[in-house]
Amino acid sequence: MRLLLDTHTFIWFINGDKCLSVKARKEISKSSNSKFISIASIWEMAIKISLGKLKINYPFKEVFLQIQENGFEILPVIFEHTDLVSQLEFHHRDPFDRLLIAQAIWEKMIIISKDEKFCNYPVKVTW
Image: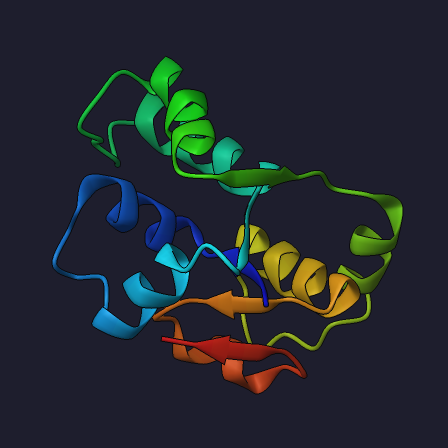
């Protein structure tokens, strides 16, 4: 399976946070699954850290090392993703989440997220 982690899912996974569901941790840990983190999530973390709204267990510069060490791939944003964002209904207003939804739809990925609003879109969600 091709998995796209929501920002909070990625943070909880690398921090070993118990907020991450057992099912989500199991799917992320499976070596047979391809795991992706959107560049949009990395950007979101950088913004929230700079605003003091997010704390992580290590310097932000180490996020890339965490991505590599945990076998994640970075998913870039391409024009087709942004085009799809422009067509999505406004069930969800967060611009980062809307982009993740569009990426998952376009790339035919499963999103791992606790956010119930994702289920309002034609995307597979697991938690």
